[in-house]
Image 1 (tube, helix red, strand yellow):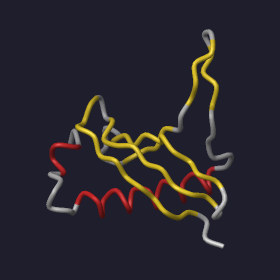
Image 2: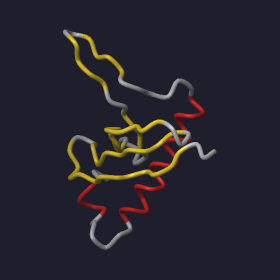
Image 3: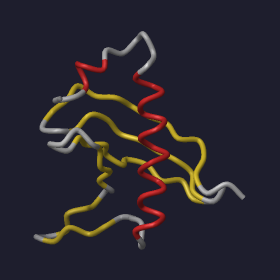
Amino acid sequence: MKTISEIQIIPVKADKGLIGFCSFILYESIYCSSVAIFTRPDGSFRLVYPTKKIADKDIHIFHPINRNIGKYIEQEVIKKFNDVMKNDRYNFDNFTTR
């Protein structure tokens, strides 16, 4: 069973570090979407998982529960993001703040 598959990337024009969104399937069973891709000041990337605001509290819709799976998802998504950005259709400089 593949851990993560069908990674889809939607680049957006960079805004306060946000450079895109992604969706993917975990363990051939769970569809995860609306995960934001941000750049860090050092040029690396981070994923931000969706939340819902209820009253004054942010409720996590889903997120990795351990560092290993979180790091694995991040690596696979960033690998796919870099592949998408190699496409002539996108100019990487328009999507990053580096």
